[in-house]
Image (tube, rainbow, N blue to C red; front, side, top):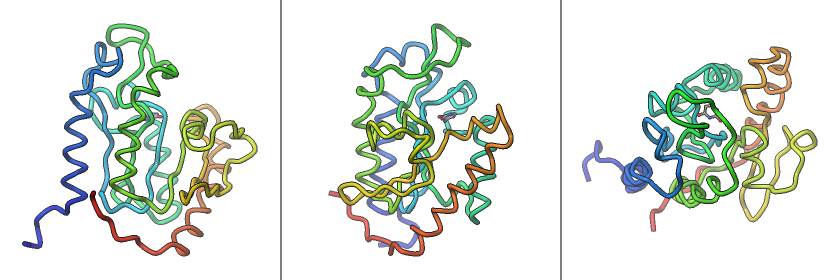
Length: 205
Ligand code: URA
């Protein structure tokens, strides 16, 4: 095998991204510019999961490229990481809006989340990260339902062999800069997981 050939996991992820871009499982496809599958290496040890694409993400096709993305990049830098080191995605892959573009951002509905869930599951099955960082309440609810974010943020939760680090959504910093301190402190937990865990060899079944 030549050195430049993409790994089986990378190929599987690229195929999955293609399928997500064509997805019409929920009504959100009607008003989107494009779906936003996610991005980052298939070998990432950290997967960050946000809520849903916003206007900038819908335009550019990449997650967290707007103002909240800048906060996220600052957080990653605080633990010596950049966005190319991690895989970033959202619970819902198309921008939830009230109607035709530009429309207003709104939270995804339960039905939209359920329709999109298989995509997230498949991404995690391919990547098999050491830790999943949930960004905000909606992402946390997918992995640790019923746990109040105010109580569990910054605490590692291990359930069925998966480690979750719940964080407040980076957008909170846009409303109040002082939240950055809380987010940075919580993010420090990543160091602990990463030094403990060994890279698991990925297989694509
Ligand atoms: N907020 C999210 O939850 N996801 C994005 O991709 C951008 C903003």
